[in-house]
Image (cartoon, helix red, strand yellow):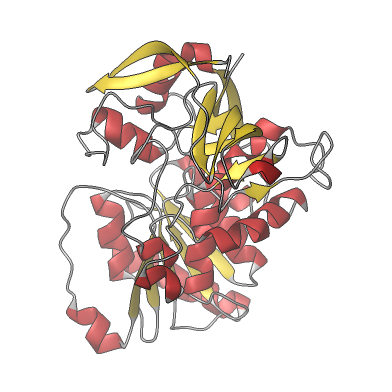
Length: 356
């Protein structure tokens, strides 16, 4: 195949190097995707700066929020040629006992771009074809309200992961959903929980994120630095004002910080649940007996089941979940500088790297 892949590889802590490589013919059941955009996720920063280990050792192309067009296909995947696709952040094997039991995100043979194999901080990426979600013909995507293809990259993780959390927690009308951490994932959790019919409260350390959460559907935004007793009192007041149940709260932890996880745990109520979406390597202090005392439930969310991707795309293309204004386009050519700026907290939006 006469095609050159260009991009950036992580080669050490905080260090990216550019590369060029000839594209090979995709393996059986796999496709080569010309990347239209790849989002920068908190997880990527953990791999690059914080010593979070990847399954595949460095050097490695990071990036798992990928959207693009299939330009080559291996045996058994030819029907994908020319299609515009969303690449799942985690592709399960489809054969193991967890996949057969309907728990694909527990699959130990799953493949994650930018972790198990090269990801999307490049002009092209090779991925499994089995779980791709087609976006549809035409430009812009039908019903997308004028969204450009690169803007849909965030659906691959920032939208789908909280969607799975909301669905697994069975958030619905009459519930209070509490999003702890209203950042690049939490703002979508707010929108999805609101679309499910819940009254939504967002908790964050920054005023900017709290204001944004209200703009995108939260009925209340609270400072994470407040006394937990005052936070609980404000949440009970919100329940009275909205008619939401005074217990059974659905807590969605999306901050990926020790403090956020400890606060989220403290908000468990009888019959309630906590969904851990954010990741941190820092250990926290929790009274696990709250689960027993409250007959509560704790969920983990390693990505999202591919079966939910069409629903996530539909929510975004219908405008129920908004991405415009929350994403920012930057050139892949400037990846080291941009990723460093994201790491320093200098960019509020979710950055999507776009090849030239």
